[in-house]
Image (cartoon, rainbow, N blue to C red):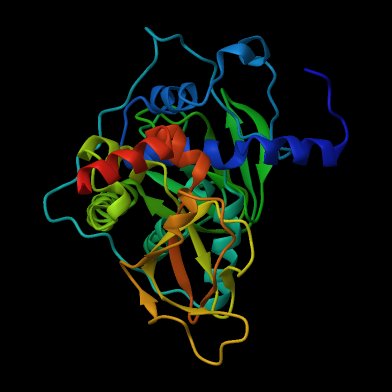
Length: 350
């Protein structure tokens, strides 16, 4: 592959192949599956996107321009040290800690820039926010110790921490730096020691809350998504396995009140399922709305998957609205030809 040093070219390349979206989807699948081997889940997902003709280019990689967190050297597949699997007690309910608006806004921005947590859907992130607890440490306190089991994830708020691997300092952590997040994804011991250099305030998320929230929410989300898909005429001929594959490929988006989700006259290649909020449908030249208000469980834009027609109306959020999005390319990758599905659906009704 030709080297790309121009920043605009890099952004175009990432956008062209939807790299950020696909990598985020892969990590999200591993987290929600509570997998003890997340890298296999991620690799298996990425293999479904691979084109055999591009195999020779697979060695080219682009990394985010941010300070890397320290990592222990690989021990090899057969020598890897694993911690005991985390068992969630029956009846465990994650705690919710009150936070002011400023703290919530700051934590939201930090989470969006974190390699692990930014892969989660907005609603997943929002639920996790409640479980972050403020914790304080004194000078010299070891917040985490290399080799210990991992049980919490921290976001540093005030103060400075020394991060060391095998007794050697590898970086200084300051406000906004997160550490210990691999404990939430892998059953592996701590990769570094983190020590407070003076008074430190941080926000901590325990692994039980993390897994309980995501696993419980994942089941509820899946049940809701399957129920909606069962109501779509186009998809009624699909078996449960195919619908589950479609569910796992949906992407969540949030629109603020007043924002247009689709616009009349635009190209249509996507359909939407509302998970919360409300939308209205309007047309140019019409003084009134052209349909009832759509709410949780309603969907729109599905005809875009069967035709190349322009959008027939503008759909706008009347309040903060969360939707699940399925685009044409994702649909065809998961389920195959849309025309074949349409023909099968037509034959089933004849």
